[in-house]
Image (cartoon, rainbow, N blue to C red; front, top):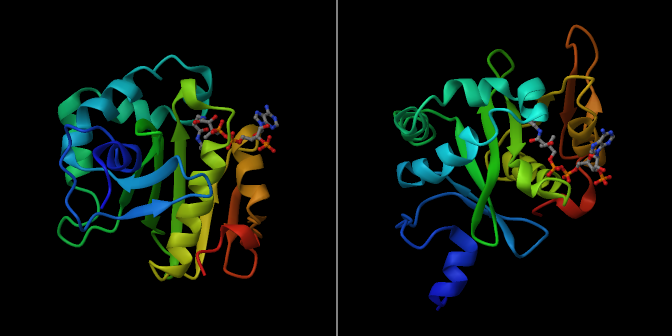
Length: 198
Ligand SMILES: CC(C)(COP(=O)(O)OP(=O)(O)OC[C@H]1O[C@@H](n2cnc3c(N)ncnc32)[C@H](O)[C@@H]1OP(=O)(O)O)[C@@H](O)C(=O)NCCC(=O)NCCS
């Protein structure tokens, strides 16, 4: 039986009641976990996204995230309409660092390529530079390939986004051939060993 402190560490703020069927994925760091967002998370998620509005990395490479979240209700709707809602398979996972919300990693089916999940992520500016994106992308990629049943995971990376490029390269993602431009991909054979769930 977990203590309250332990469940807080694993799942996020104490005031949030977490339904048991939610997707939770461990990472290689026991203090960092991925946990599917629920509407009750909307306030902390919105507050964090709103605080990235003028962050240069977010403005250059993640402005669609801040643009879409104009108020807490928009964030609540985005979460409520994700995975689990009428067959929607857009899974939004919060990155929880010692129980604190620190960013998101998303998996969604590729529009045209069957068997492919697309991964996206962003990390709160105050939590960057300590490997969170790497941990999150590793665990989410592994979850997609080994649990969610995808054959490959693709990531669209702006070539100027060196931090993000580094994240996927370290995990064994490789540059996809034309006509895919600025896309990386990974499968079970290339995902680096330590990141596999099996
Ligand atoms: C990209 C982003 C997710 C990285 O988050 P993070 O938690 O700081 O990333 P990590 O610490 O896991 O790894 C970053 C890696 O890039 C490296 N890096 C950072 N800036 C770099 C740069 N300018 N050039 C080369 N490498 C760089 C780091 O050294 C680290 O590599 P290492 O693990 O080998 O030391 C974060 O900067 C972010 O949210 N940016 C805005 C949104 C975004 O770009 N999302 C991705 C869209 S594809």
